[in-house]
Image 1 (cartoon, rainbow, N blue to C red):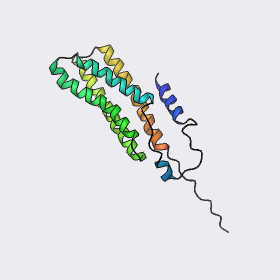
Image 2 (cartoon, rainbow, N blue to C red):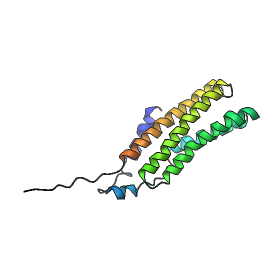
Image 3 (cartoon, one colour):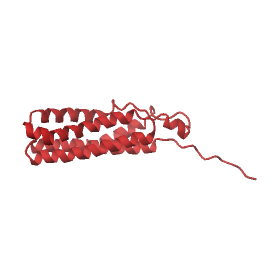
Image 4 (tube, rainbow, N blue to C red):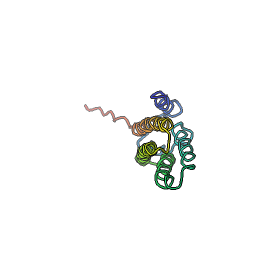
Length: 163
């Protein structure tokens, strides 16, 4: 899917459904910060990835599960959890802060998948596919951060006439 999914997500967010019908003040725009994200591909991708990781780790022996597996499951679950929490925030800066936390958890998940791969807990092809999915999710998160930064509508400057 590559960058195409990111652009489709951006186009969806910029569709007529999301465009304001009138000029809004900054205060009115911040009131629109709540956004149900659970229907987005980004959130669904994070959720399905978390379920897949859970199933992989669940069959590991005790020591790998307790060390690498615990950290991997926590970091991968944190991506979707922080996306969900961002959707319940009022101000744009709060929304962005939780998306940054999700992005940090994504980077941590990449690290733990690499560790699991190097310790022969995950096969190379599975690890490659998981890392590819995380890479796609990272692009979507970055696009969503950019969208959140740019979505506030600014008032047009007043046009004063001097004589």
